[in-house]
Image 1 (tube, helix red, strand yellow):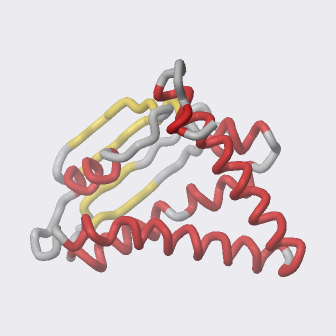
Image 2: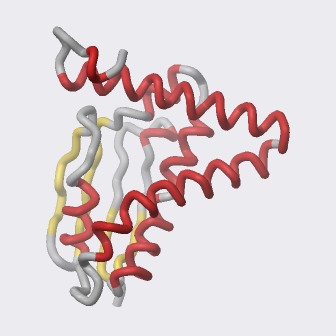
Length: 166
């Protein structure tokens, strides 16, 4: 179902249908590349392509922050401003020095798990640290990133922590 044809459904239902299509497409693309290149090289290629796509999509926003030395709260507010409909989170701490969040619902983890492709889904999650580093490189910020739990790994939550490096 395309979002433009989502008559009679909620925005969440429409976005979930689009996410299912996107996950299916991404999984098949990675699988086909893996058949040709092998597992390790295909995952590296998929990671690099996804990382580049996120970086390219984010660049315009980040360039507006150059020289303003954004803190952890500014970074998190930017990051969370474009979350998918199915995301649910609880803010544990939101200060300029520390942002701790507990995501209780990830719209992608159940989709990848439903087709036994969590390993492919983890490619998306693994980009988070590099995106924070890219943000630092471009804006001059000093944001660190930690996470101990991932729903894609079967945990009940994701627990990202963004902080200002000392």
